[in-house]
Image (cartoon, rainbow, N blue to C red; front, side):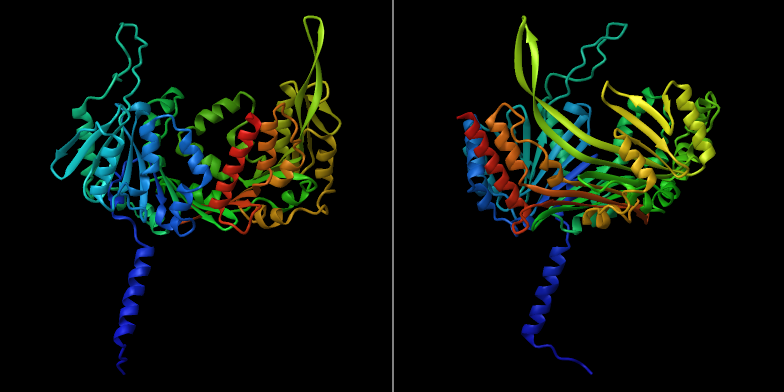
Length: 557
């Protein structure tokens, strides 16, 4: 049976298909990002504009105050007229970093700004920079904006290149020649050639050939970040790795990359992150993500006044595999053999489970009396206080006892149930252990309480149960608990006190969880939760910025 679709119904279906494809498409100008870019970041103004209008930002009190603080007139004019500069604000703006030793920092920094009206952009440019000289090179127009930037554009895209040259290294070698290859400035021919290269990225050399980057961009996040580890390590291999005499083989980092997408939503900022490993690291990844941090260990941690907790399962087998891949296993065994141990002996001592917690944090003001030229001088000092506890789970007790003996032989003080490291006349770190766990804490009572399991019945915050447990790696910090015992009057400035009190009203908590591994990928999730759950987090941040600005003004008056 053939179903007849009315004309308007077909139009609706076509429009819906176009809408859905647009929501999951990648900007065309992303093809100008080269595949060997070390870093690429994008700001999706189309997505952000659905949450807060551009004119709300430019018309805000905070934006106007920021503009008023800009000393250069042309910079002020540039900011005030940005809405009529011909930019396509319903698109994604990119910045990428590419290795190039001729530029400052050893990298060329390039921005990609889509244009909706190239004529408007050119008018805007001539208004803000009346002395600018525009040159035509084929379909591309180019101009130098002072010593910092060089711009080129066609009818659809503006490319901005940072043209700061590398700083010369004037240190001379034994032969008297300069080691540096930098120069005082880059000539215009070189800069123009780089602009031509920026516009002529071929499909084969474009980042859009990387399916992982394409997936990140199609997810439609407000902000995206891409880090090419293969390129990054390639930069380091000629310096850091060689200086450390490390053999870092290329196969470990081949196609390795980090991708993150961040979104500003109602009441929080969320982020999804992925670390892509090479095929050579797949076995290590499987081991790393195979188990969650031990639940019993987390439950034993003290819950009262908990400010922060970190928990992790770090597979000993994966560590050994990594040492093998990096050709460092033999060197590590050689070093440990001098202590009568080995890599296997050390790794077998632990299950790989560990956790760290901070409780009872406070920052208060105390009066301190100093002597100056025979006179007593009284001033306020900031006095922090906290309880910190670090726990590892023991695997083979006999292996662990060998490590304890090594610490004793190194001169650590012993006590009835463990070791003690004196820090000052009043502070020490206590290392206590039983057959299952070892704990290091600056409070003896906390250490013994953990080993005895007395905190297992102590109520933990819901966040600890829902966030920290059930992941290979997890981090949680309770910002409100952390701020609760920070005395707003710890500073000598009313301005700083106002800022501290305003900061206390911004965030509720921060969490990072993940570590699971699939398809050669480690996956993580982040949440930054705000106290104001009724407004989008961008608006909350703008409101915070205005209050901080007001506090700054009040303190300076």
